Image 1 (cartoon, one colour):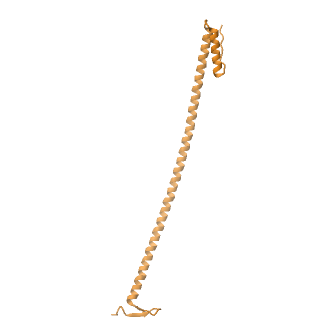
Image 2 (cartoon, helix red, strand yellow):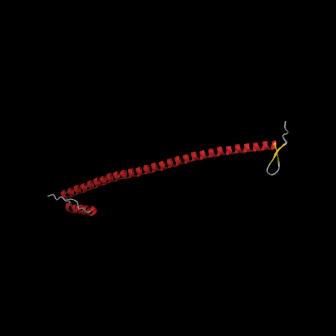
Image 3 (tube, one colour):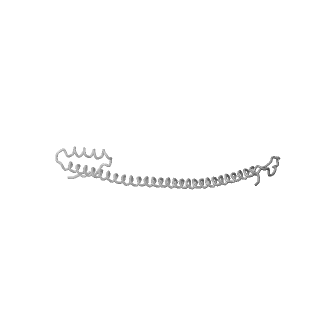
Length: 147
């Protein structure tokens, strides 16, 4: 067998190289190759992770946009529904108030007719009622003169 410490050749600097040195150099090269392969795998894994994160980010942005659009549409529908309900309520209130005004005017006319029919103090009572009718809503009302 050969001695592992025996000089095999001389390098460019003039230093002697032994089999052990060559074996160490081969192992260093092999370790460097393995390190580079691990680094490549690490880079590939990191690139895949970035792609996954980018996909999740895009999906998350889409979900946020869809949710914002949905909230906007629901809000707009609620506002429109509120306008419609408010309009219906306002119309019903106006109808109710109109009916009340008509009932009050009819009641006043009936009182005026009763006052005109009465024998005692009829003229003064009719005049007072006429003034109240003309003074409140300005329409004057309807006067019925009965014999």
